[in-house]
Length: 177
Image 1 (tube, one colour):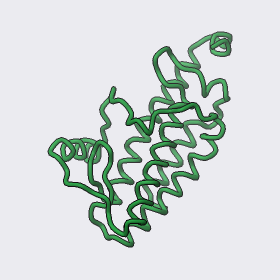
Image 2 (tube, helix red, strand yellow; image 1 turned 90 degrees about the horizontal axis):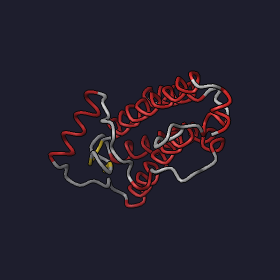
Image 3 (cartoon, rainbow, N blue to C red; image 1 turned 90 degrees about the vertical axis):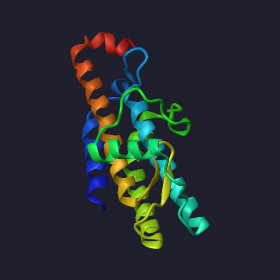
Image 4 (tube, helix red, strand yellow; image 1 turned 180 degrees about the horizontal axis):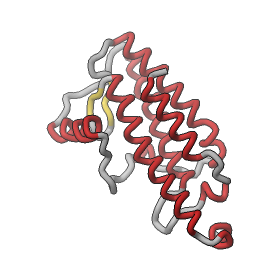
């Protein structure tokens, strides 16, 4: 497995290790809980897999020309490892309420599945742009891997922040929510 996606798997696993189902569902008002964050990540991996499957079925990369805004976004995210705060999740990646334990169990598998299909497309189509990202535009296989690491680390920070907040709250309060 690619080192970036291996780091992603290990980091997500460590972030949710030992979190109870109740803790996975706790969140401050107006924010996602850890289960929703994990489901969002799961849905991004599922969407990436579907996009690469469509490219394989078509027998060619599925890309458009990048706009200036997309090039700028790619530079910020992939060169500076920075994902801006406050951006709305694309429609297909908004949590739908999948069971936390299911997502927790399957997210690692989806990362592996995603790596396999990215590698297959890279082998078949080369190292050029392979698939459009909904915000960043056309990306290479290496850029897709880096995006998922940067994006995953961004959300792991949120999960770790929720864990810190939980430790500071009275136990009875977190169980009641």
